[in-house]
Length: 245
Image (cartoon, rainbow, N blue to C red; front, side, top):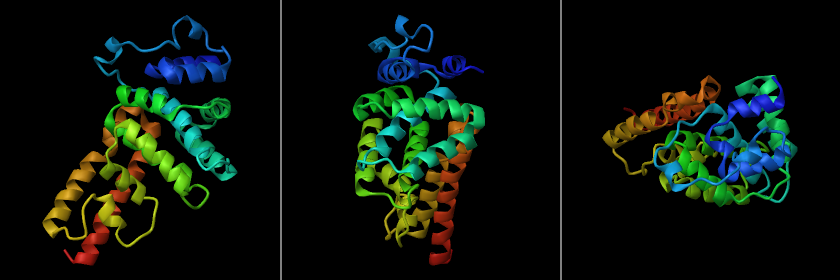
């Protein structure tokens, strides 16, 4: 499949608005018909009914947000770029990943407004898929071995624009750190929680982070969702051992 056919077939709502403009600039007009409305702005009517997010919409959203996070600390670490390439290869296969990374390199040359692109994603993408985006962004930040304060600040800002609350942000963030209270943070509870509260929190988080929540994105995104779900299970099992229930 040619590059233009790939990108044309992959996109739904992300073919317009701020993200569409970024893609258009990155491609330099390669996509046929882009200048004929594909990169235009959304009207209020567009948002009256949220369209189904396609795999390609999620893919491009990842590329754009990844570019913001990678540049957050003022430098681009090759390990972070390799992480993006490896993740895309694992999700999409070599050919599609090569197309995606070629686009990513062009996107990465641009100055991008985190607010504008995140607000578009917030209005057009379901909550479970936005949580999955956040998990991926922390994975990029951790690719060089440590999540820097500048990266956390950048991801936190994106999370706010995406409409992700503080508890969900801290839960996903805790999945990339090692500390004595991480299990509690992942389950979004305090250390003072009772056994019944822990069980209730686990059921709630297992439902919220279940891979089936993003099944509409395609099987290529199930691995990341399953990893997030497994970390919730691990947190619960850790507290079971510590509390003896």
